[in-house]
Length: 485
Ligand SMILES: Cc1cc2nc3c(=O)[nH]c(=O)nc-3n(C[C@H](O)[C@H](O)[C@H](O)COP(=O)(O)OP(=O)(O)OC[C@H]3O[C@@H](n4cnc5c(N)ncnc54)[C@H](O)[C@@H]3O)c2cc1C
Image (tube, rainbow, N blue to C red; front, side, top):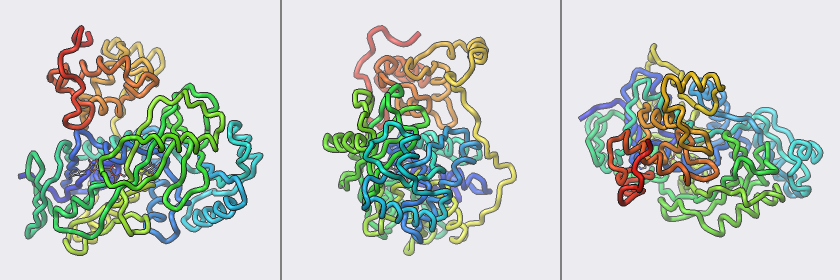
């Protein structure tokens, strides 16, 4: 049985950020993820806005962690080599009631330590956003706000953690936890592991995982949210993240420019019982379109290329705050639970807080002299100049074969992803790492080619290639014409 100082349960942005933080120290660490890949829970179903921190109530854990996390992003993007843009946020005001609400948010933001916030007038917002509704009269402006691709960030955290010695183990759902004299024994469907400390970052299942260790300190329910993706060539594109005035449980339906040049519209917010229900609902889609058109009335809904949904992990009766603490009943078991929005923005700071909680719980945390903060760069063919592309193709002709036409992704990049540090083993795993299948045709032209490449590289029949989860096989027989050649 392999032994680790710390085992992290859950490979979303929270778990991977913690793995990255702990990889800086002389510790043996493993991350156990139940899915076939990391970043497939709430982390793959969100807006990717690094909220600067004017929303949380001053004094709450969320307020402190949100601002600290958001401030860490620009430097992390440099070290871990992930995309980040800085469009800023407008929280729009349409009437006098909104003005009072925005002043309140401005006050929250100042108290929370958010930099450069201001209420700006109609002329300024319309000059920057010519397609914005005439009804918008003013806005709270947060110029420091950034946007990232959340699963790119989770993959970057995990890859750098792995490069620095953390064992990132997918396909390992934790099904039992036993307390021992010196720590814990964890059972998954494949193996047993022992450790001194557990960090529970299991997203919507954090309460279920806690129960495995006999802990019943909170109950969770998911808050469902629908989102829409618009094609890159959409007209009337917003340049700024634009929210309406927020409600009590939601920031409202926003128009969000993405790092890849698409526009997102999201999100709805509805409490659900089912922790796996990531389907879209027709009323939700309609609410998104209505909400977005209040902001950009000429929004072209014919340019919608995809809808998706996510589930925010909410701890009930906890003032919508995060639940990050050592268990009061089982020592050495640390909760990183209830990481609802802004969990992406907060992840780097949650990781630092978990490090401190482990320290307080008695774990010896000593810096590792050979920690390498820089993630290995990957080849992104479409971002290279013609001369570099030629050079690359000469070295490896697979970079000369375009598989995804919409996003210009080559066979070489897909093969790199399959054999990467955290290998992509599924169609969606390839999509998240390379963007193959993310464009206008949504895989219509390239899906069968990627299945063939996965089948060839993994040595599996194409019927065994999965979309994502176990059981999500894409084919039930061999394909006409066979593999990509
Ligand atoms: C619609 C929507 C919009 C959002 N927009 C934003 C935004 O713009 N900005 C922002 O900052 N935040 C946003 N969020 C919030 C953000 O997505 C979450 O806070 C964040 O993704 C939570 O990450 P996590 O790692 O805690 O959970 P998850 O990503 O759910 O990860 C938990 C992981 O634990 C694994 N797991 C569960 N049980 C087990 C087990 N027994 N054994 C092993 N592994 C297990 C799961 O498979 C999963 O991969 C949004 C959320 C939603 C739903």
